[in-house]
Length: 486
Image (tube, rainbow, N blue to C red; front, side, top):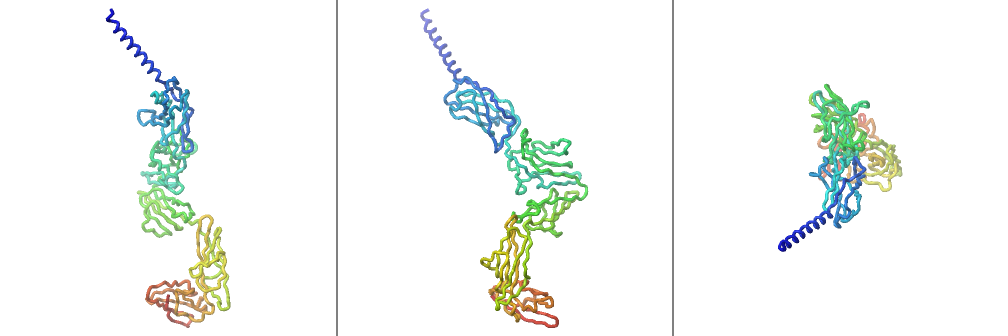
């Protein structure tokens, strides 16, 4: 009996140890409840992404001093097994009372209908109950965009189809959602004011193949948040054709367009083969769906849809164009010896114009108004620049020669102030024909009302070029040579 006493004491000691450590382990456990919130659905965006949740935990005394609370967002299907993410981690010891409140933001790739949240702790380690399911979307794109190059119509041949595509990047004003690769789109057919629209493709890519005529458009797929989204396209009317169809040509910079914005892109919807024309003349090499130009004019296109053809045209106009004129003719004379002057004025309908005057290609200092008093001989021009709206510049030129000129000159100096071949006024009229021929037999000028500005004398390197003239007035004929020197 005495021998059994140590054994009994040993067993009693072990029992007390088990109870002690069991109580210690129980005191280090907490239970975290289901998080609650007032939001559903979540429609986050760059402009707003702040959300609160509340949660209970107990016992409060079970928290360790090193504890951090973690908010975990499930996968879009509500699972925490894969593709879950941590959206918030508190500071050490930040939350020490129950209920706790946490403010956090949703990730920018959030998109789904069955998300859940749960709260976890680190000290001691515990995982709370998951929340109820809720839809959540981050509207990373929230602006209208274009499809079909913003062309409102499209045509396909009977038995065929037409592919509508979201423009990427499209025109300069288009904010294409395709730059966000995680987005999907819902495609709709508009059935008018009475019937509801038809969803023809859900959570699809950036294009849709149309096989039936109708009015189509796309919306970025934000699920329960789509009703409050501004991310949608223009509408396109798609028709079926069994014969030749008319096609609309659009200009990316509008019509009229401002050339200062660079080239504008002319485009048509659909087709297999293309031929572009300007003023009825085929543009060589222009055989794609688009054509870039900075020149106004009448453009047209022929389209082969594969089974039927289409034609379209656009009268492309320049927004910055304006008209102007001088109050003097191209050719003028003054008597330099007597101090005679010529008052020249330019008029235009340019908006807020500025002016520059030139003599023989050199800017005349301080000549910045719409008029100038000419006192010297030479070649003049004035440039008018429209400074408001679409800026544009035009130049207007004229020439002033000596009224005392009696003889026909046979030398022209390119370095002189008057570097053109001028003749007496008696020979510059409708009754006198002037012909100028190069030494190679090329006719440089042949006509009446001779104007020195109509014959551009080109520069040369070594040998002084020689030209020949024939001036005919009635039965009177004068012949001679003209040598050009530097």
